Image 1 (cartoon, rainbow, N blue to C red):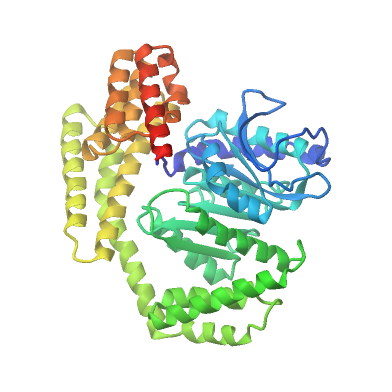
Image 2 (cartoon, rainbow, N blue to C red):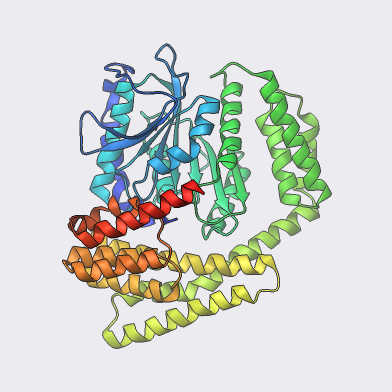
Length: 488
């Protein structure tokens, strides 16, 4: 899956976006005004915004949707403008718990103007068409999309965000977390995700502040979380809404979640997983207060917090964070210097970067245990993403095609098994006007495992290739593969 952290993107885009969103003011207070009939119970992959037809979004309305009541909504941002992907992925969860999903198909990392327009348009259009519960507005994003969702929740008072759902990333660099942050924060990260240290740090801060926060670490890479993981998160948000009186309390629902948290605490204690045990007790004590008797779990939480077992486990966790950061520090500096270096220095830096990253990969393969392997894998991927993002910044923001090409070629050389650097090289070649080379690079991307026709068909940087017969053959080949795989 193609996805990047989007740190640069957030810093460039967020102020423009927030100014436009907040400028809507109370003009949108008449929710449901101008409402149009939309099909419920099915994914609508593209809805053109009435005020700006250049903007569109994917939508899922629960099959029971009607305008007689107000509905919670999750605004969603994918870093590569693929709103249909999370809507398809999570539609069953939305259906089960009665949430609307709305995800931009035009917002994308490093396209600052396009993102601000998309954010404003999707907000306006959904508030005009749908009857929304102003108390249950949620923002969700993956990677760079998680950062912009977080920033909007922090900066847009009018939005009155109840919670943020962050996949694979947290706060933008320009807006750090504070104890005063008012919304619930639900985060997911794979254990192989290079952003794992960042979200572990965030968990510790939120826990120290007693914030409304939940982090789920699962077996996975930098990606949208699996639907089952999101479902548990949505249940947590529902529980929060019940405690706040936003929705009626469903006692059977509360009892089920309480029993599950109890079992997790027991399982963690048996397996001597002090962090998992602490998280389970924290959930029992804080999430169920006022709904269940939790005094015994508060006492267990206090005792565990001061235990040698937890302190030792937290130290091991911190050691893993420190080791990953140490592994990337020197190479990260060299990556930052490479594009501006003289020709001779650039050649030397390139060699050092390639050798250093190859060393990390070999170290991961030879690791004696899973923890050591994960540290090396995350460090490698962190550097790889830094290189990809540096190239994207040169391509999309600074329009420096040669510098962008340098980074994409560098990252392609250290990952000859990954299609995305070659796809980005194809974008660069197409923007330069070299169609022959761009098509050759697209063939290479397919050879390396590019799977989805829409990845190139909807790529704005490949627009000049769309009428080329060879481009159409590549798209047809990918579609045939997708249909064959779907039929199996």
